[in-house]
Length: 183
Image (cartoon, rainbow, N blue to C red):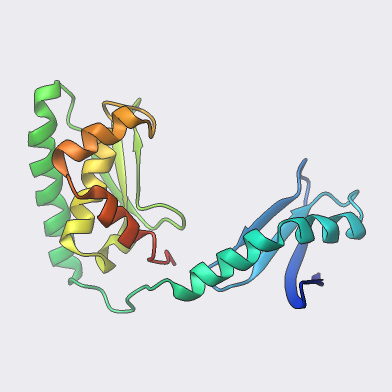
């Protein structure tokens, strides 16, 4: 169901989905659409007031998505991409061998909200196939980032200290990557 609220003279349209959820959930998607899911017992009036309370966040998210970029053309052929991922994965593994870690399994799949993930319990690093749109520097950073999770399982200062050993300029790269919309 489409809904609309007015905040400081600006219309905020959102799509209300009724689901079996405990909380009201709000998402702003790269296509600039706002989605709200709520239990059917929550009144529309209450949901509208919730959206109004989140209006600054919503408008900032929409502006961010408008200013973000995503190259429509891959930077590599599929073959080049797979070859680079495999060689870079092996290179980074050789750097991390000194920590006496098992070589993780590499998986590739399309992800909507992250560049990679690390399941340190199972020893699996998964990389987003959308990395095909990124530079080699950005791909290398993501691989180092995920390998670093094999040593530090969170995003603490200790974690970023490990990342910084291998990618001293990681803050700049991460900032660039935050401007890229994942499809």
